[in-house]
Amino acid sequence: MTIALSRLNLSGTTPALANFYPILSNYIHDPSGSALKAAQDIYDIFNSESEINEETPAPGYLWEILFWFIKQIPSNDHRQDRLVKLVSEIRNIPALSNNNACRWDSKDLCHTSWADLPSFYAVWSDHERQAPSSRLLAKRDPRIITNQPQAPTAGTWGGLPLTGIEWANLHAFLARLHAATDFRDLELRGMFALLDALEDDSPPQLADDLILAAAHWITYAGKKLKDHQIIYPPSERDDQIKRSPSSRGALYTGPPGFCGERWTFWRTRFRILAEWGELEEGTREVAARAVEEMEVLDQGQARERLAKVRSALQTR
Image (cartoon, rainbow, N blue to C red; front, side, top):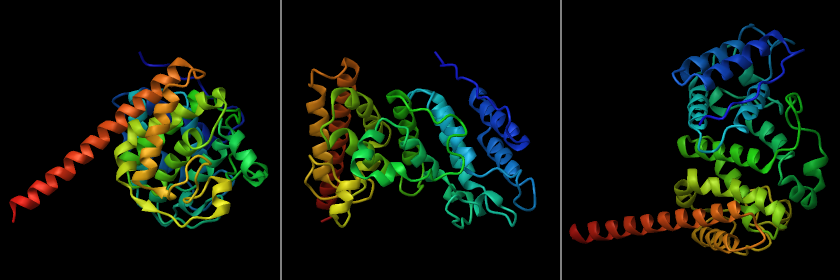
């Protein structure tokens, strides 16, 4: 059964944005819709004028509306995959001389093409402020919560706190995007989700909200995370903020970054949480399933290593 999505109130928006929203909506609701055509239509709206003016939408609006749709779409819904295809097509559009969206970023960064997904992470950070994990961030470093939103579009499309399910749906999309593309730094968002859910002691209600998002990274991008082996230089401040490559939670004392020791720690924590009686039954089931998926990935890696050893022996 396909979940119906609510409509967005576009009253008072610019004509460009009033045309922009239906492109996404029609693409999501039409299984035969072309991702390439939708991406080109979006691109044309951003570049309808030769120069940036008050009618030119900032690129953040694209991600605000996209995330608004995604938070409503269950993790196992085929429309999540369709939106990954759309973002992949947007990244493939080459830059032109009047590429307004790529020149205009909330941090005044210069982007050479849509491959950089201008303002994507700024809008994601603004959503993180509304996520269940925002309670953890506020305790770690008040500057993360009290500074101004990073995207000029923040709050335009709602700004209401995200539920645990909505936050998990967004992470399912990010994990799918990470598995399907080479877009930079997505693995760090996966690490932060796993850190929040597994590397700190959280009360049951908060843990219920965080574990599902973390488990989606194992389901949809587990192999890529496991294969990504990199250790980052540690920093005491990074452990306090929990939002940099070398961040770690209080319960994890191993090397910062991605490594076998951390993977094993995450698996162990999922197993412990799967047996924690104070969590919702659905949360415990999700944690147990994450353990099973991680064990399957471990077995697959072991088989690959054995095959390589046998191949090497045969060539001697």
